[in-house]
Length: 294
Image (cartoon, rainbow, N blue to C red; front, side, top):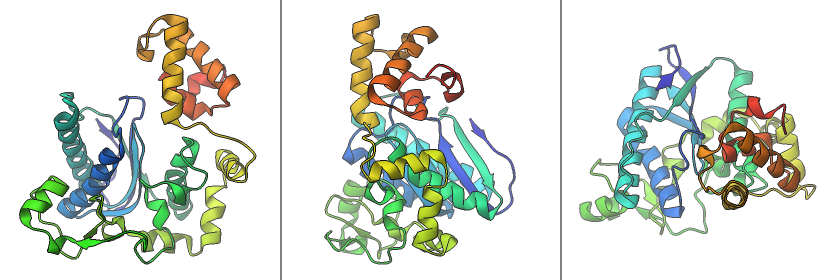
């Protein structure tokens, strides 16, 4: 299901529901393939990618185009991701019904906040202290014009058709001047309008201001300065499963009733200082439900 209105050309925040599925990307290979699919789907649909981030169970993207283009883009992305997961993991469940929200971004202030919100996701989940440290998002390229000099790049034009299909898992012809690194990941600077995202903020200082504008952003910046230690979703998930097994004799959190999930939620808050959003992802409860209990 896709929600959202307005077919005018403009900016749209596209996001999937992280509570609907346990994971989209499980390891580095999945994330690399996921980033490559961003470029593939952009090349097919013509939509502009302004900003993006891939998390283990959901994604956020800021696109520029029409609503129709955004729908075509995310439907194509979900289809290719579903096929990848089916081939690799034998997971036959389609992602076609994965809930997607497309939100029109109509003001400059909201545009700035949306990019900052997308880039903060990796911090909120506890994967890093600064957005630029996270490898699976566009934040690491903000205010950077040149490719990562520590990587070895190879042009797609230098690869045979067979090698391209093997590395990128697609028959779609991509621009020959696009580069891939030694792990087979396309340089996101080829398909993401990083210069536009940077220009929207005008300066790194203004970008940092919006990253820390809201309370959760301020907490995240404090963590970067050593005031608080975060446990990532990846580290916390097996802890929650063990809690559930010990307390309720099941590893499937979704089988628990609301009261038992709230018990887990309180333990996560008190023992691991997890944020409301992180707890929501762990126990599959809406943040609004959690607010009065944790």
